[in-house]
Length: 432
Image 1 (spheres, one colour):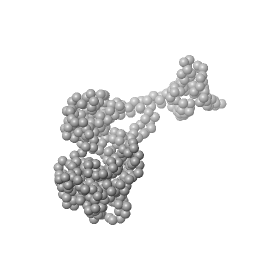
Image 2: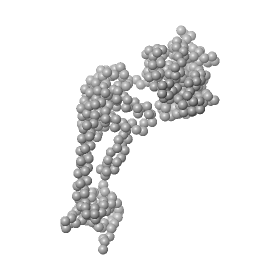
Image 3: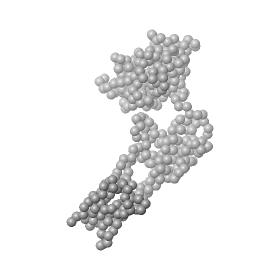
Image 4: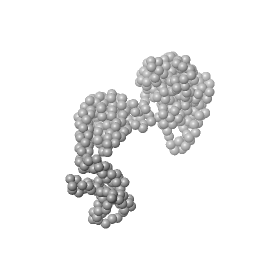
């Protein structure tokens, strides 16, 4: 007659029990020591002798899991296999797999590990289940940021890219950073942080030993030359009083990159926002351009009122459209491959007119002009720039203030292009 199964209850297992051995049936027992610790054991006959196989403590193995493990052991016995031998074989396989993984990791270079870390990878857990490990930049809403992680490491970490992980040292990191530490300060800071994160991950996974040679404080800061403190957002900008000299040179150009640069300046937009603009975002009835959240730095939709000068730029761009009825067509596509223009395309256009400026700097030009030469409220100007602010000003900006911003952008276009009907006296030009 078969023995009764499942004689124990979960409450008994988790409750207080006297020292002893408690049967759950068919070979599964709960062992309780004098100190109160509890563990599972499975008993079966091996070569005619009663053999005990531990299944783990109740802290890690529940009653349900213990029964499942006992059932699997009984199936092995029924098929002529020994559970202890099977366990030892499984442990050997796990150890072989671990050693193989370590051997593979030993062949890992900084570059191969960095790419795997960025793109994600699959690994097998102790029970043989395959799981997906996401990349370290997965979930970042900004696709450009994800791409920059990879491109900056490939470009600037070239001196250590082909070194084995345990070969990357302080000298190697310095070779990556020293050439750009003072000339491209913000880029250098990002590269250092990304190298540090890749090496930290390799240390955490046991692929190399610490300390991390890319640490700044107390390490690289003692070896790299001093520099001015990084100030995010301070891009070389054209003084607003010089716009009357700059704009005629830009408006005389007819390339698609020149049109995109004009549109970027007239809307006070970020370069990526205008380069990625689609015709479906343009509403020529309401005279607005709606930039979706995924292309905005703050991650929120931004509605830009369009001045007549901005609409004229769109009219010129429309003459270059491939199809008039495709709403997903780019407003300013690359002529070569019809993909979004690169940031470098706009920068090269700008350099052809005047050296030493950046595209992003025109947002500062706009901000300085609005603050120095107009009566427009600061919060309206900040909203036109899609800046994220808090406090009373943030509460004010819950509304879109579209008409106030429309007046602001009309005045800006009037100042930039000397557009008829603008309300602001060009103070900078009058002074000159």
